[in-house]
Image (cartoon, rainbow, N blue to C red; front, side, top):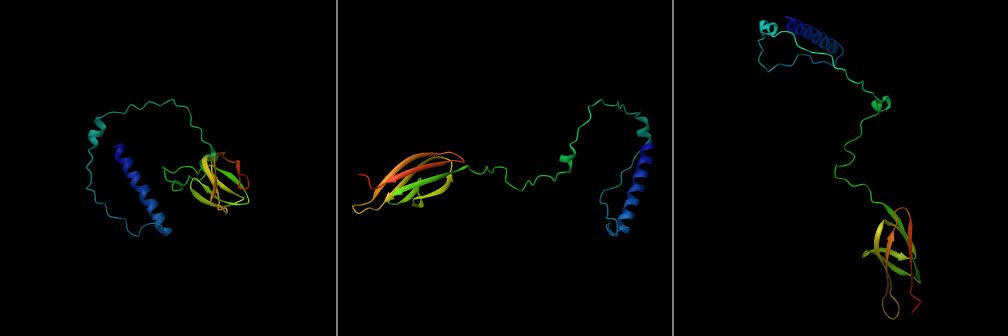
Amino acid sequence: MALLAALAVTATVGAGWLAIDRARGRGPAVAPPIDAAPIAIDARAIDAAGPVDAAPVDAAPIAIDARAASAPPPDVRAAPPDARPPAAKGQLRVGADPWGEVFLDGRRLGRAPNQWDVPAGAHVVEVVFPGEAGEVRRRFEIDVPAGERASVFADFKAP
């Protein structure tokens, strides 16, 4: 019997909320149809089951940080799960006398003297000067520290 009374109260409260929402223009004009078949409840079977043993649980209270509760949820679309953090960078400064074309790991960067932001780590720098007697190359193996500068100097005037 208590279950039936609880169902009746729930239905009454739900109908009240629906009427309030409809009056405010937010609710549906007509209640949507229910596709489920009605369920028959035998109150005698519920009463025969006896009381439920629901002893109170002693649990520590949950602390909620008000700042975290009011913060908007993180945007999970910001980065895919397999996204890597941005690579650390450092500066590569290349000097040359008189000048030279600079290649970092085989990729052309530009003309020296100059400096570039490059990924931190181990690299091979080649500076190429065309020269009158043919192309002259200087090769350097360097390590560019993250957030710092590595420098090389290619002297094409020296023998």
